[in-house]
Length: 292
Image (cartoon, rainbow, N blue to C red; front, side):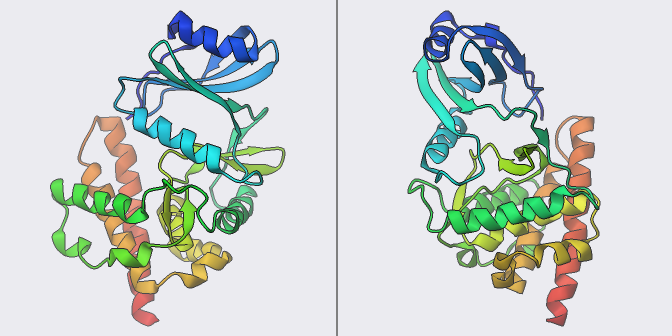
């Protein structure tokens, strides 16, 4: 659920001073819209140029996500298309992360026919090559994320039979996965796709990144058969075990369906669309697995 964000002016003086000591006086701050956490997310126009600030109170339950993002971004190889972390620190009871600003960036368009689609898939292929072996030793194993989804679905009334077919070990691998790719985390600037918000990054098999993206492509308007054709262009997809893809799709569907019954009306409607897309992808992959 989206929540209102803190603004630059809400930061204590010590936190603002820490940023300005390194990047110069802030002449203007343009905040991003509401997000999943109330932390500051703002483009700062400073005396030395533009930067992007993310900040969260040290007492916030979301602190771990920001610390993970800091750790991953510090470890990313130079060629990875992600905004560089320029500086991080703690001041005034806040964790501060300052990134390079992507001028003129827009969110990727994942709808059918979009010229962004091949760029996104090429970017994912490039990430798999650049991030194998995993450059961040503290990255959690992908099985933790998926088992958490499965556990949450069961807690919310998901069908047990739908969730027990996935052998978690098949998800393991040596690639650093973003593990949360969607249009909000894919920015297009200068004709290139940039990947942001690495707070949920995990270590696993490269094909899992594509399997997690698949329902989101369906939600963007692609028929499941077209999604399969798109993913087939990525080398990592050729290594995806058919049964495991279908079983992972079942977990995604069960989790999405259970979550669609929670939250305010607007959020439920958005989650229902995601659940419907996951259901369509699951049905297709089961049918495909039966013919392989």
